[in-house]
Figure 1 (tube, rainbow, N blue to C red):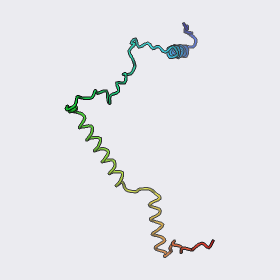
Figure 2: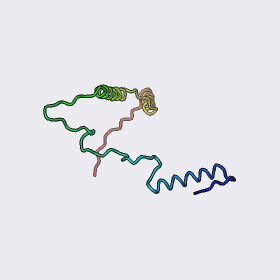
Figure 3: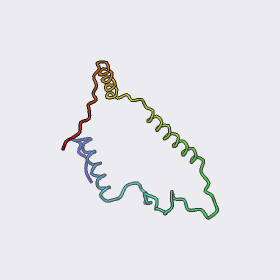
Figure 4: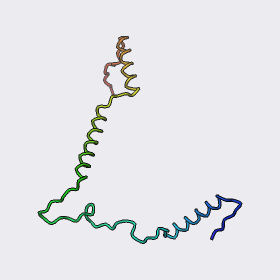
Length: 118
């Protein structure tokens, strides 16, 4: 095992921990002490719920309606806020100001349409 050197102090300890962690990860083992699978095996059913027999209705849990209506309301509110948000960009303001100045001076930027003769 790696021996600590008193001259380097914290650097040696850190190096020891890095080497130990690298060996642990390389071997595929961990020091957690359990050997259970780290994930649930797929059952092939949506959300792990088995289908009900014909004629039975699924009973909703208490939180499901709150989640559905809460998320739906939040999405609707966010959409409405985004649609009716005021335009505060500098480009829009500058375009309006430039149009006002051109109108005051009587300058029109409309050019007559010319046909191409190719």
